[in-house]
Image (tube, rainbow, N blue to C red):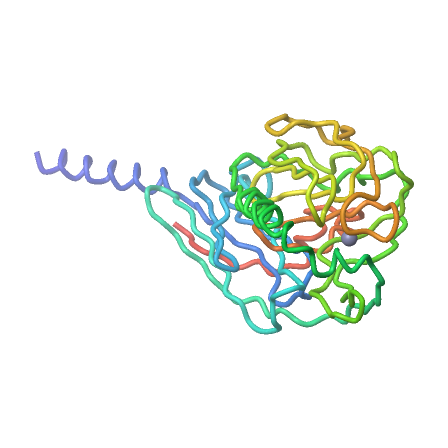
Amino acid sequence: MRLKKFLLLFLLVLFSSSSGAYAAAWVNFPTSWDIGQAFAVSITSNADYSNPVVTWMNRTINLNVEQGGAGKISYGLLGSDVRNVKPGKYKILFEFVQNGKKYKASGNIALKARKYPRENLSVNPKMVNPPKKELPRIKSEQKLVGNALRTMTTQRRWTTPPQPPLANITLTSQYGKQRVYNGQPRAGHNGADIRAVTGTSVRAPFAGTVILTGFHYYAGGSVYIDSGNGVITVFFHLSEINVKQGEKVAKGQIVAKSGATGRVTGPHLHYSLVLAGQFVDPIPLLSTSITQMLKKGTQSQVNNI
Ligand SMILES: [Zn+2]
């Protein structure tokens, strides 16, 4: 009787230790980064886990659990917007569930200022201070754009490096450049302007779903594509839009033709990358991968059960 009880207890201990044996998880993020530049984060574990999320700049980003890393991995692409983020330390929080228990891991990322250039532009005065009758239109477009940029879907459809949107990437105005329109300073440039004659094919950098299209007052012909985990691609000043809202697009698919619509001084493609609401520089990402980016981060252990 006594032996039986002992055996049962021993088996229970064995069972509980084998089910959770050597389960360990780690998070990876950079401790210091430049404002305006994208960075990579990850959660990885040698055992299964669920519900991975990362909270950054007041947004909670749903991640996926995939094969990779120490066994399972969740990838995130984050950044900070040159137009409104000040240098300083910002909290990053990771959460996930493993063996029925919720784990949290947090740290700080020191964001440093980067020197971006300044540019003086002369444009039609109507475009600097729009006529009163255009204000309702501008307001309703801002609302549509705001809603589109809050899109948060879980399935990761972005894979690195992205497909360059144009065959030739020659910048005419880089991300972060502070623009002065007819003497009035404005916020830094929230994307990269790429040289392109009107009618040049524009390709989707990532697979995704078209969440908004339209011909807007400032941005002209616009396409917004959601690729999951808060990753959104934006194109402006298009002459022609070849996709519809709600349509799924493949990586590299032609979605539009470049042009000179909206507030422009000449034909070009405006290309923005938005990461959980933060507009970041899309260009450095074109020549790197998530794996290379993660090597610039610091890995720390969350649990060991
Ligand atoms: Zn631009």
